[in-house]
Image 1 (cartoon, one colour):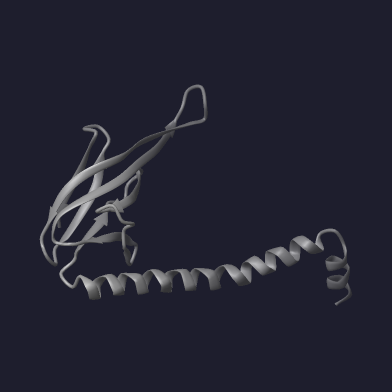
Image 2 (cartoon, one colour):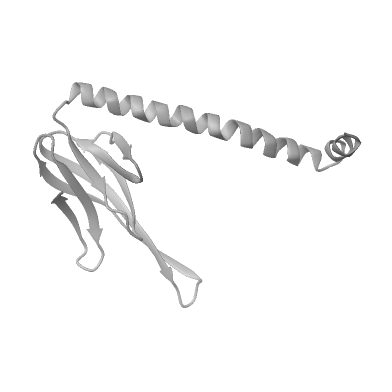
Length: 144
């Protein structure tokens, strides 16, 4: 007990208290954040019961959805997969891609493409996948 008092009374005591606070507060924040995301997804599905799911293909490319039909996307999480909902019919998806590679002059070089706007057609209750082909420099939207 004396060791703990001495440790907390010194200059490192503030760091220890900060670390303990972060360890306690961070999981609580994450739980509330995820519950809020889940609630928003459920509300979207209540309003749009025939919405299609679009999964973001996992790769070395960071794929960020900026908007769907000029509104922020409604994301969902299924296991390790992430995605967003779109309504049946024509949809305008705005996204941005970036990837990092080893550089010559600098340790790494990050390339960012976008924002890119793409029109896609979705059918009710279907599942799709969206990705960006770096070599062809185009968006790929395929049905699963």
